[in-house]
Every structure is written in structure tokens, then in C-alpha cells.
View 1 (cartoon, rainbow, N blue to C red):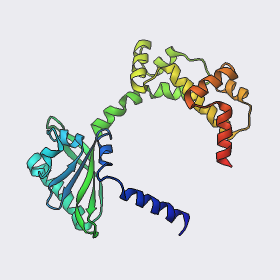
View 2 (view 1 turned 90 degrees about the vertical axis):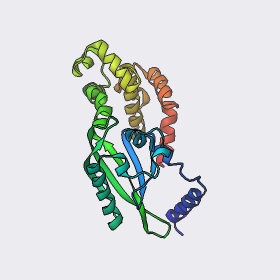
View 3 (view 1 turned 135 degrees about the horizontal axis):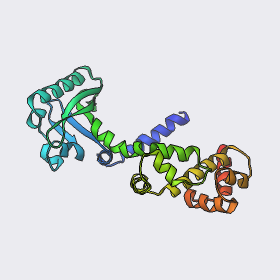
View 4 (view 1 turned 30 degrees about the vertical axis):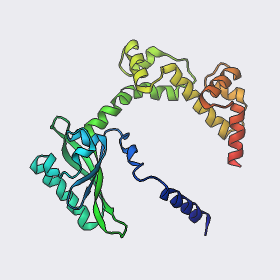
Length: 253
């Protein structure tokens, strides 16, 4: 048995000890993504919270055993069922389906659906599971980052420069007050802290990939001196620059 097979064997033995269904909890944390599973008869068996609420229910227990025609308008329900039948008949995934899916108010929303076959212990198709992702929901989630992308990108390329809040605000088309408020809400930190973390990240890369002196790296990435760099580096990375370089050298060896 080679090393890869041994590791996979250990992984499988570990997986057998897991309590069933634990990974499903993670599905409730994936933003703007609905998860569902159905049996061969089209009855819902599992769904994450987002799917349940999108369908107008309060708990998963309420929708278990319901079919698409019990929840959605007839035309949409039949379309969803057609997709299920394709997966069941072929035993192959059907991915990237662009279709309408009602939002919480019942209004149609363009979504991307992925459907995959579920197999039983004997390898036979026993159902369908998949995801539904809203284009509108995804766009709303990333829009704050897109609005601030010009200023964030500027900080990544001008990390050694003095922090100029007025310039950053101008790049994102906002007033200084609006920019600072939006930046804090989106990145959960202020622009100065963001810049320090960018400098530390670039400094860490230089420590890992070059043999240049720490003082030289500190000045290049925008810190006042070696002491300032070391203090901020330890705050962000949890270790000193010297210990970080030593550890990475051992890892590389």
C-alpha cells in the first residue's frame, strides 16, 4: 500500500465514525445558495434553511414529503420535474440550468440550478440533489466589494505610500465620510488597518521568498522602521518576522 492509499484509508475509517448529517449544517452558511434533495418520486427529503424560507416555510420538517407541484406554480413545477427526470434517467449531473425560481414574495427570479444523482449503497440512482443560486442575491452580496474595488486595488499596488483617504474616497466616487463608513461595514476594518495588513502580507512574502534583511523589507513595504514592522507583523501573523522566516525555511527544507 502506497502513502496515498494509506492516507485515504485513514480518512475513510475516520469518516465512518462521523455522526450522519453533520456536513449538512455547513449548507446553511453558504450565502444565497439553496440546497435540496428529493427521492425518485420527487418528494423533498432534505433542504437547507435558505430553501425552506424561499419556499415560504419556517422549518425543514414542514416541506419534507412535499413535491414541486405542492409549492410552485404548475408551469415551474413541471419544468423542475423534467430536470429531475433527466438526472434520474441518465444517472449524470445536469449543471448550469438557467431558470426562473420564485423569491420569498413569489416573484420570479433568474437563478442557476445544478442537479446531481443520489445513489444508494448498491450504486442505484435513488434520488436527486442540487443547488439553486440567485443571480440577484449573489450580485447584492458582492456589490459593496465592487463599489470599493478601485480603492482596495489602489492600496494593494500603492502599499508603501502614505494613506490618503481623500484620494481613496475619490476613486470609489464617495465622500470621505461615506467612504470610511462603507469601508468599515464591508471589510470589518478601517482603511488604515487594511493597509497595514496588505503591507504585512507583502512583507511575509518577501521574508519567505528572499534573503533580504528584515529592515530593508520593512522600509520597502511602507513601515517606519524594523521595530514598527515587527510590532505590526506579530499583531497580524502571531509571530515575529524572524520566527516566521525561520519556520518557513524549515517548511521549505
